[in-house]
Image (cartoon, rainbow, N blue to C red; front, side):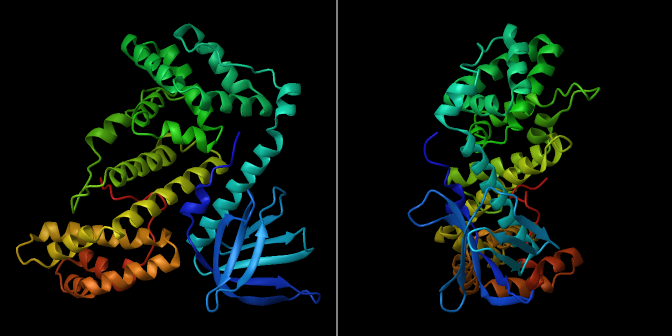
Length: 398
């Protein structure tokens, strides 16, 4: 399968924690306060938890994430476990619930990869897997493809994922058949394609998500999920996304990658929260949330490094000729921009807020607080610029 996906290392956000260790007397000893990341261990392909002291940058904790069921999440702000290597109980107490959820999602994702890799070796495949190749992707073979996707055991599921990822035309051909079925109003075919796509998504593999969430496929994938055989009418998700979702571009965004990630993040959130809300399991939701976190961090990182973009934002905010409606859109954009910056590493957050202060963010806040619009005033409270929004929040507004 090659080297594991290193996305956690590049998109990870540092979260402030206290480290505790259970002593021989059964009491928790405070080991210090620092920032935790999930990253690859030095000279290793394994992921681990690393806590660095916030004052002297010394390592407070270095723990290799285990595939064993040893981790527990408590009270929304604590993750604890018994470390098998050192036979000791450890705990991380997070400053924020969002930080705890973020690290918990990454631990769960790392464990899923460990379980997958432990089974995925050539000997295992050659001895146990009966799935050698995918069926031909044709209208007549939809029942066979559906059977392969929905009735395969765990070993063949892994082999299925490999074959789908290796086949560059799999989804394109399947979506071509989807359009044919739609044109012919072939409900049996549409229902089978719905089940096939749903089953593939439930495989919960990042390599597959990377394909189906790309700009070329995502709308067709969402379209294929409009034909749920358990719902007595066709959903109209594509129509909603095309006709009723408005991209409020307060400041023109010129970077195509930023625009692509903004749209992708909204659509992933919509698929998770609306299209497949009743069928997704917790592990798949956690993986989708991780993609959303990574996208948000990338968008904010790219925008914050664009000095022209930030300067243009504040120039427009301060211009007396800027209309009241435009100013509100700019402030709401700035509010969400600050909220999503919570996905950045702590050092990057501090640099960003320093730059925002230099540009005059407090003057903007003071101006908003004087508005007669009470709802708008709430946006101007200083704490609101630092409060995180929902995980699927993007710069797209309905």
